[in-house]
Image 1 (cartoon, rainbow, N blue to C red):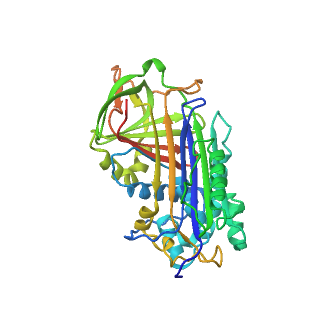
Image 2 (tube, rainbow, N blue to C red):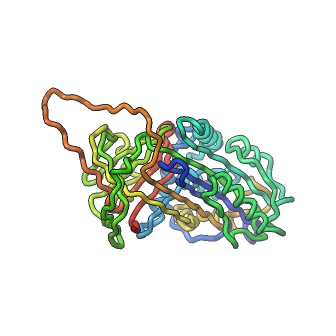
Image 3 (cartoon, rainbow, N blue to C red):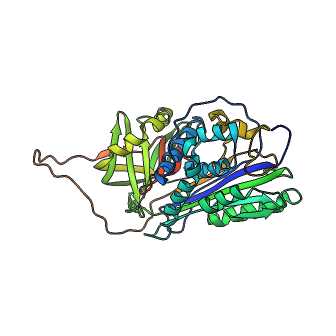
Length: 423
């Protein structure tokens, strides 16, 4: 397909609150519109995503690849692999020919099982939503399709989004009232993220050529199983890539799931409700790019190696927000056709559609506070020695990588890095 036509936007919005009773947490949002990008095609391992477990594996693999393409800049970053995967999988339901083939490859989805993939993502979303409100956990996933009023969308595409993703269609008028349409979508995003993403679409993101916007919102607010004691927080030096600063550093010494891979340390900090934060700490302030390069290859082995150990954890309080344009990384990953006038989304509409832009916004806030509850600490007693083991120091006083993962499904909800902090 050549020439101009309506533009399609794919969006996701996400928030998670961490360890604060009424405070902020993580939010991410993505939105996509038409644009042509240069590409360097990359091969990706295609996975059978015909089950929720397979959809989780594909989403994680896609997220690790995408994160690696964000570059090793000096800024703090927070993104949502699952959020982007859901939005792009929804768009792929309407792709055909080489456009579909490129998208499925980048999404790590085996085309032989592509038809079942959408139902599998639906099962994953249902499993996550079923936990909302349990054990003090707030976890909510929602999707919506925003279509140009009067534009004919194909029934099969609408059925997939409605039945698998729970994404009903809502008509808006991009052609004659793009600002009103933007306000409507932003209001939906703000509602789904409890106000943490008040504006996923900024002025200029929509115009008269926009034909379709797909949005996904995920809200997560969790409290630590055991909060960091407030009396343990002190100003300590954090040495970032662009300088050092004294920042509030939380501290706790107890048994955590811990592993070591050479000079890399991994610790898992549990939340109520079967979610956790995994913090990956390199040896030195300049070693984070090496850890980021290792992530896709070593993540599974890091998680498998975690064992209860007595650990002295230092972790800074931090808040960060990212607004990422994912179009260029996705095009370079191997799906340039979706962003070009030659895109084939003919299973969505007879109108010529292509993706203009993919944006994701994310927010994270981490502090000491959580709901204190009874906990069981496990330790192994050995008769071979009476030596009392010293706690392993895990001092996150220099750049580190972190993930928020769901323990029941294995889905990585959020992924980010801390490279520097201000006093």
